[in-house]
Length: 211
Image 1: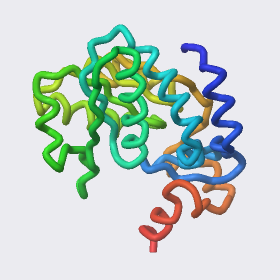
Image 2: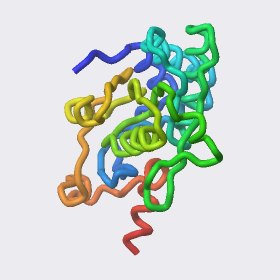
Image 3: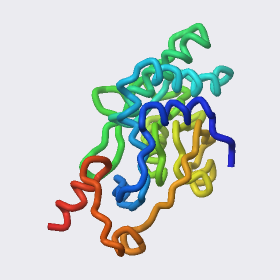
């Protein structure tokens, strides 16, 4: 397991993006007492720029043409990473994004697929929990004829299982935040009757689906 970038961890702490001691439901359906709220980071443009710069530095020697991220948070991240790569490379690096469909797939809309074919792509994500969304973006890039040079996340919440072998392409991340994540049936928080947080994560939608 690689060492987390301390500057990135410090930014997450300064913006109160690491939340604990509650009962969260992730978009993947997993449950946990901890949550990384990337939405607390994005309003701080200087911090976002710095995180993106650290990420871009990892790929300054790679022939990246396009940076792709999944909507919504990945849009902001891909823009900033492409901006810093452009400065580092001395040429324009494009930024585009995929959009989530009703079936959960991530695809290119708005004609963005035309920027992918035959180009070298870096796929970026803010927080990776199961790797599912990241893999869907990678598949979309490959389906459109793009070459995925690498994928990179700000936070990898499961560095043991979410690795290059699982993702299917070279994969890196800036920080790992140790979290115990459970399937609903095995969740000790559910068994203890800890109320589900409906402010952060997907707890509200989860509870509505149970009605």
